[in-house]
Image 1 (cartoon, protein in one colour):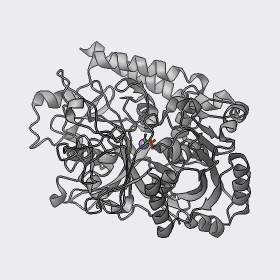
Image 2 (image 1 turned 135 degrees about the horizontal axis):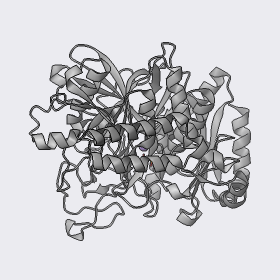
Image 3 (image 1 turned 180 degrees about the vertical axis):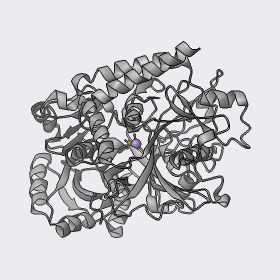
Image 4 (image 1 turned 120 degrees about the horizontal axis):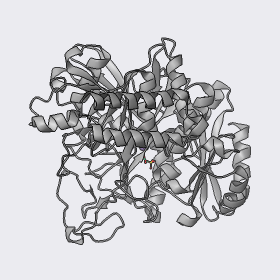
Length: 590
Ligand code: SAT
Ligand code: MN
């Protein structure tokens, strides 16, 4: 066992005063013991084993149901290194203001030592973290989401490495006024207090695998991205890997687990990852990606056997549900699941519920935590130690107008511009107003651990270091008509867009694509819409690039990027000007 970990555990215990310290080994016996303790203590409800074997329901504190971005800070020495899009707190202020919240915080509780690996146990690009937490619910989630326990200590020992990322987590008193999620990029350390929820508390996920790892990637020449990774196979036998960056609760999990409606023809989609990708330049000049996680922390509402049959199969067993509704039979229920609400339902707070109340029974950000190995469509390559080679990167978001269903960038640089300027309507995954358009570069706005201007520079550099960078696309499944209805059916039918992407990557599509000022867009014949019952008006709308909308879009992109000042790479300024020129050219030619 690493002596440095032991020393640190002692040191933290001297401040937090837990009643006892438990080193987690990740064994079955351990999780069974933890689960029964939580059931006995009332923080976990054992679900009906005939409906969901080995599965549980957890209810969060009602004030603690989503990530709290306003309480999330980057604690670099200099504010400039956090950049204009992050909250910044100096390490000294953190010490004075936040460290005292850990003082005695674990009195009466157990402190769990949770060693974990982000990435496959044998992959060179994997990294080790250790989370100290006083929440057994967090331990149970970390066990599904990461390779947790002895396996991580073994890896340190085997590789003779003392390189691990420390994270301290305490539930504190759960009060939002004493809640802080802090990241110290210089010392690669994480402190989290006052929340037990998802990305606030499972420190391997957003805190390490994105915020701290993005800094490590900048320093070491790789990338940590908020991306799904999927495998697309065609009837012709080619296999292609596609990564996709979408903001939280915009369908990453659904796309990564897409069940192909054309499976019988040989069009297959398999999952490598559904939330995070760590990306390296391979010896062959391509970008290779691993999924650092081993489970899925997916949004439950809206998940059904129609929208995501593979997720429904994944949550059948061995699943922790958080903030869903409970049926009298001990089954779970949420809005959008396959069945109407049964009577006698208890809502996510455990209160009697009926549709007449007009409130949702499940919290809109209710989640399931399931092991990746439950996924019937898991890629055989999902934990290859080299990762998988990326042919394409998709940038997506929710946009009611303006953004066509799919467009390809003219170059890597233009692709980086597309990612840097993308926007999406906000969702319930973070507290705050839902449905307002905000710029969310590469879907990393809440997750980049350093100045995003420098981050764009890192993207440009990664492309330059890769002889064969992936093709870059922007997608939007969420465009609406004048009456506010979605124009595109989405879900399984998104395969049609993936097929167009593949054709573009293979250079097979001369008649199916046309150049527009914003990128290469399918022609009306280019996208297969056979059998979709899509009117030509709707199809044209999905493919349209409206001059007026784009004039203001380009303006907003420009002012967003301006805030990065000197940190904004010149290449992106040039891309912005080139976009304005191309839009101007269209205006002039009409
Ligand atoms: O709460 S999490 O950050 O883990 C999920 C998400 O917002 O993507
Ligand atoms: Mn996410």
